[in-house]
Image (cartoon, rainbow, N blue to C red; front, top):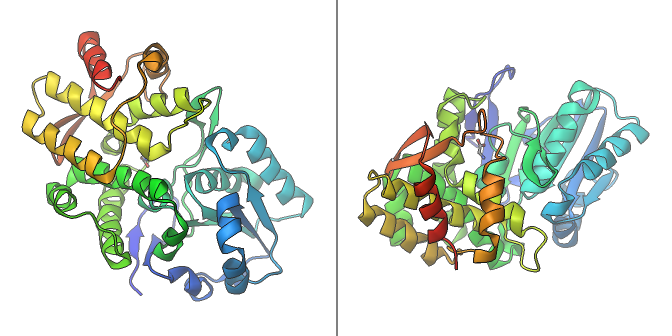
Length: 357
Ligand code: GLY
């Protein structure tokens, strides 16, 4: 099968990205697992619950499996330490491999642990949520949260392969699946108006339609990462919606209704698109199209107004800020964005007010 290729510094060969239904079943022929001295499989609770038998059948039931508790609050140093301890106690050496099977949390943290254990061992990403397939597993970003700040600790490190098997999506609750659409909408919004209009016309729901949409979205992300792997300029486009979105996600994290990452990003995209309109660049008509698409997917567009102050404070601590200045990603049109934009406080305030309920 023909994978999409992601080129990344330090990788002698491009990282293959295999997308498709049941592509995980071919892992033994896609990657030379026998070349490794030991293999650790990392999964989250949900994957363990739904897919343990399948994983054991495909990879072998003699591999150690580490189950990570689900939930953003577990994307922590304590969990990373647990992974390092398992690797160390089981005497994993430099020729070891970690296979991360799960959503963004498992992929990000498993990759971080792999990239730091013994100064780096190989890992494979097997994203099982649409969100991780569209975004988290691609691009070599690893990390975890600290002090209430999203992905504030991390490394750049690319896997040996990414296996995006869309059959895993069958066990996802609708809410989780919809959350994944947020990152795909973002890719369309920043780079491909045709994909955006296609989504607005008809949301992919069948596995075949999802494979096609995922491939288009993956090509967009790989193209951007290839040009700017370490996020010096162009890759910043991928942060559209994330300055407000990460703040919203983190302040709601301990509430009784925590938001999924894609839900927070949907709200963040609305706020940042509104700021782009208010600055006189992004056409109002296109903003309405974005609102229509986000609502069509069933993603939220507002957040409780009691969080406004906390959101505004979190934005000032965003890891993309330089000298305490927030660097915004700004929409000029669908498919055309500007990075490192300074916005007046009054526009930011109005953009935030727009998403409050
Ligand atoms: N999730 C944004 C990026 O990979 O750069």
